[in-house]
Image 1 (spheres, rainbow, N blue to C red):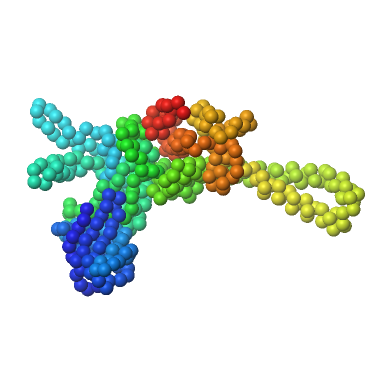
Image 2: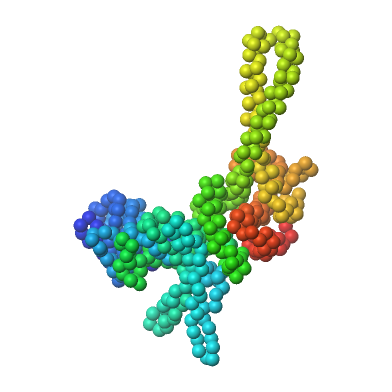
Length: 465
């Protein structure tokens, strides 16, 4: 969408146009000369809209034009000032929607009875209510134009509604949108573009404009797919609300805790990152990293420390038992006195070095094996998928070798062939998705059933590979 008009900054009006693309990237082009630098805020009257642009950074300029990249924008008809306060920075409630939320919810919003059509507004669905933050799903009636000059329709659309007893910054709003869309993405299989972020003008807890709302556009692609999957919406959704409705609030609370848990945060961010490597080997490495991060997060640190202490004790007990024998052997081999004099210190260093080196570490192949409780990898593995055969290697060893090959360029002959990497990416993703869903859904059989009929994750199960 392009908005043409006049934009006010540096105490004067400048002709220009603001463009917002499909991924909410915002660009402002000013059609003048001799303009420089960063602009914290630019206000414009363009295409019958008033636009307020924030954090405008100059990225390109030429003869007669300057192009800025904009961090976020408020789009409305009327910009109300109240006691010189910028109300766009006093947001206490907002709502947004995205695909395929309506399909996942599955509510019938139109009722036909005796040739009469009525709209059905489903009850609100409560997701979260804690620490002054309330998150619900509500349905709203909206006008939709097929053609502004011909047909006007009414749609009933579900929105995620967030309200807080504290003012929310744009950064906080961004975090909440990401948190929520990722929750639904893991349940649905993906979440599409965020269509609108609408908010009321608030000041000191008061709604100043009644039902009128401003639209907030943030320069971020909130789409939650690891890659751009053409045709992905053709596939079935992973789960549906009707099966989870009784536990949806409990599930969201678990997700809320998991999302902000430092141990798991990296794995979740890696998986959903829109900035990841788009190559096949890049996707493979990302999924291996995600599984490794979750495995490390699940480790029992106390148990590991206890094992290290026991290991150290066994080494020291062995030394004490054979101390005299060791000293005698050193003398017989003409070692200097200081070796014998400091033998206890030397042994302590050796024991600590051994414990540090081995540290009861879990190998990457063991981590992947532990994640493969349903034998997704093992049962579909074929040695023909690999460059060379080694009877001592399992599928997990081959995957670990392949990761090391792509990461460190290890010269290993026992790796997965390039043409089979996409297949193993889907299977590794299935393991990781299963891990995340196990944190929030208690019904293991339901999960297994849904993942087994997830057409995207099982796309390679339907053909002979």
